[in-house]
Image 1 (cartoon, rainbow, N blue to C red):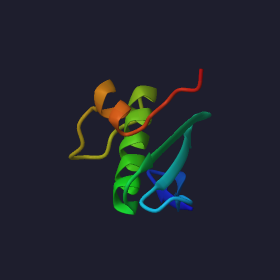
Image 2 (image 1 turned 180 degrees about the vertical axis):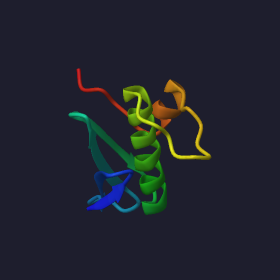
Image 3 (image 1 turned 30 degrees about the vertical axis):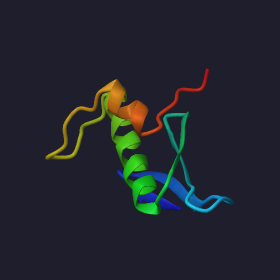
Image 4 (image 1 turned 90 degrees about the vertical axis):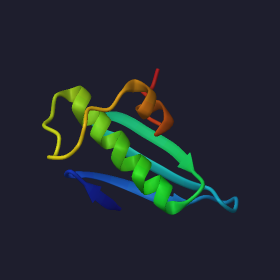
Length: 81
């Protein structure tokens, strides 16, 4: 497990080569995704956490900007139906 902004998340290598899976949970909302590299998966997880916290109204760290829905979508943020 890794931690970013007091939110734990996981990044694990998939069965197929070149697939890294990630999962986070912010305020009971599961955020999952797949990227082609571990670095991309970590970056996407942290971007998704920032976006979810911004939607919740949590303060963003200095130097970050509010993320758009399009950015969150590219990062793999999904709200379960």
